[in-house]
Figure 1 (spheres, rainbow, N blue to C red):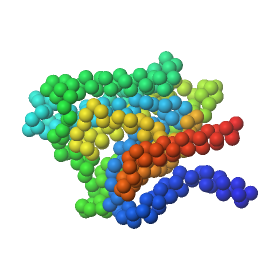
Figure 2: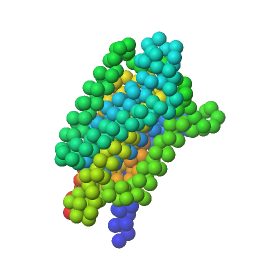
Figure 3: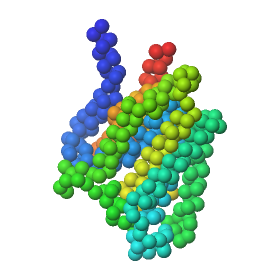
Figure 4: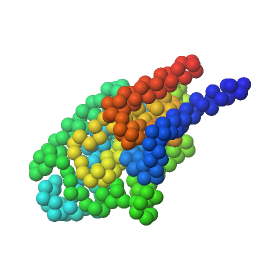
Length: 336
């Protein structure tokens, strides 16, 4: 009996043990890794990825997938950055545009992401196209549309830079005294988003319907859930979160190109899977997703910190992803 409880405990919290072991292993190689500066940098660099992964979690829990996330990040980064350049920047995207309130391009970026999500949801729910194919198609379409926009005169595919300080402060500013104990705005935004997503997952009808659809979509229909309408809502929310992630990424880095967000969708899906979101649908938590993001953040930052080759980092990440999916499949088969 006690052995069964221990097994359940370690299975339930395995992701957190992996994170602790990763940190401990890197710190054993270089104790400086445990400094507050390093923790702050990891949180800063992975806040936007956490928001994107939370968006991907919505779709994965329904039993779907979303390959368009990375390209939506690129689109919204370019859209917001193109409208928030300083008036004296020599290669301004819109030379004659007056300075807009900083919130306007931010909302435009988020709205663009939401629109792509609505299209994804409509294609999946109304046309019955498998999510993998539907979002693969929109991924290519969004990248093409973004590249056309990015190539407009006078920009002509030049990296968008010279962003206004009131915008970049959102990505680089902080609360508190300058130093390791300051709290970046972007981390605060990620925490707020994570809390809102947790409320949706656990306290709303949409969240309950989402888990029901992922657990058994046919049973969800029989129980009176409007699956098609809920899928449209879920994909739209996911798209809006990708849009927010793209806007914040532009603010954090101080620029944008049409290649921003490339492969972010794979990182988001990997973080979700490693964080316990079932590939079969119906299972997933916000803390698990955040832990998955931190695991890959620690791998990327920590292994670079101790001098491990980027190629070895890819191998390690790949092994972790395969192990996580294999573990998830074993749990799924054990329940059947």
